[in-house]
Length: 234
Image (cartoon, rainbow, N blue to C red; front, side, top):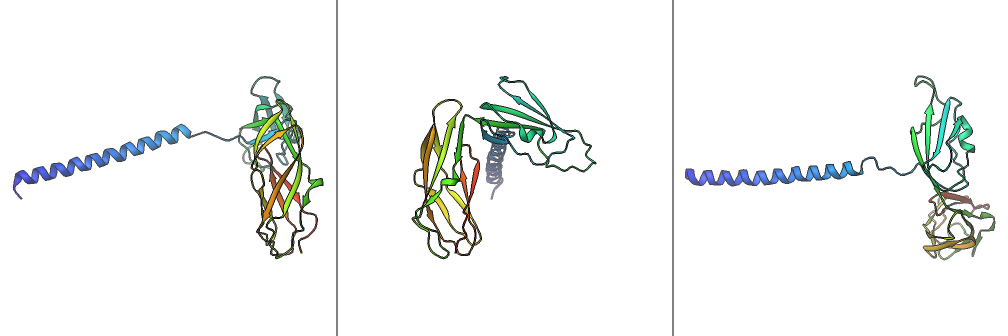
């Protein structure tokens, strides 16, 4: 290869490498910018219905709380220790819950750690499953396929504001030793209205062992309400 061709070849290599390096840098900075734009985006600590409480567990008296309505509609509440578990979020809206730990870090705590500042979303829709009136079209039996068994459960719906809401009903998970059962809603998109409605789910799968089953129903606020089947599967 003569000198001229060699120089031209090397120039091409350098140009190609430069393009490749520029592409990598562009990709890196684009990804970094995207990550920074989404950094800190945080889901609420909890979403509940109006008129409900939150169980924070056993809280030491050294802990103080400040609950504030971010809309400014009500005055902040100053609470101590377990008082937070009795606080009723009466009105829909967004609330800030400030966790203030007075104990020194060297001292032993008897409660779970929480973020210093938490957000609670309080929904204007309340949906309560009435498990006292659950019905099954057939009995679930051990080792027998439960396909096509229909579970019907009433829900009591109320609104702080408005008179209807869309509910995309998720599957119901069924827990129990040896259970492979799942319950799917017969109607996935439901319009909730004031009063009582019947939701229906179709089972599939098998319970392979003698066991008690627990059904995890999810409400419109994405909170789990559990139903324990009173009789053992046999």
